Amino acid sequence: VEDWVRILQFYVDLQIEMAARVPELLALGMPDRRLATLPTLYTNLLASTADLRVGQDAGLTVDEYQRLLELRPEVAAMCDQLASYGLPATLTHEEVHDTNVLVSGDRCIFTDWSDASVAHPLFTILTTLRAAAHRLKLPEDGLEMRRVRDAYLEPWTRFTTRSEISSAFTLAYRLAMINR
Image 1 (tube, rainbow, N blue to C red):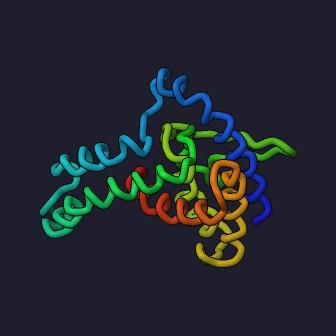
Image 2 (cartoon, rainbow, N blue to C red; image 1 turned 90 degrees about the vertical axis):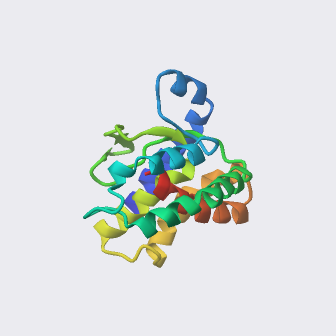
């Protein structure tokens, strides 16, 4: 658990530093998954019925697909609400887990940036918490994993209150599934 806390402290410092460099990242071609674009990306994803295999084996049922279509206004509202907490868009790795982080002494090197984007900073935590819980054989909502989560969330209190960070985390965790 303490190793994960340390890794996330390095990572959140990187994210906060890179928030000021979002225009540069976008100019370099980093995918734009900021909250303002996520509802459109969600709609575009749903437009690809062949890729979703709607009504086919190993695909979405027609009813599942319809429910996802009906969620579009809710997804947009959730993005607006998450944006209201004032956390800056930044570089997000999307896969901060034990096979993508090299630790040597007091240094961390994050590898495999292939799924990186400019997005809401808390989108990272979905994969990270799940991977850490799996690796450590701990419940994702257990005390130890809450320690990991809170260590990641605490630095973001420089942008908003702890209470709002908790609310933002709940929303970001749900929207991160779409982002992934």
